[in-house]
Amino acid sequence: MTSAEQFRVYLDSPEGSRIEFKEAKGNFYFEELVQYCVALANEGGGKVVLGITDRRPRSVVGTAAFSRSPVEPRPGCSSSCISGSRSKSTHTTGSGS
Image (cartoon, rainbow, N blue to C red; front, side, top):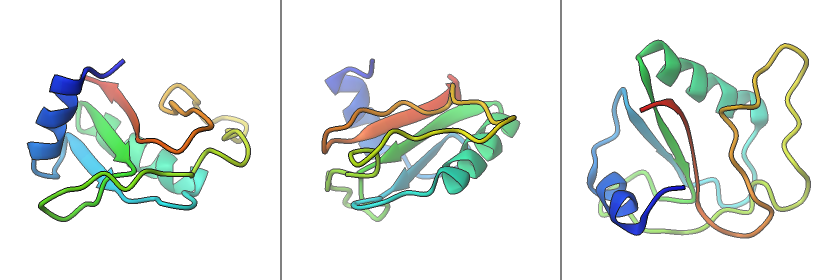
C-alpha cells in the first residue's frame, strides 16, 4: 500500500521513465495499461498512477476505471501490474521499485 507521504512524493515527481500519471476519470483500457506497465518494466520498474491529472500542478480527480467490472487480463498477460478496487479513487500500479 502507498502511504500518504509517498503519495505526495509521487505528485511532486516529474513524469518520466519511472512514473506515469493518467487522468482516467471514466474508463481506461486494459491493453493501454499493459503497454504502460511493459514500458516501465523495460526501464527497470516504475508506477502508473490513475486518477491524477498529468499536468502540473497535479490534482486528484479520481477514477472510475475499475468500478463497473473487474479488469480481466487477456491470456498470456500478467495481472500482477494491475491493482484496482471498485470504488472511485486513485490507483497506483507498477512493477519493480
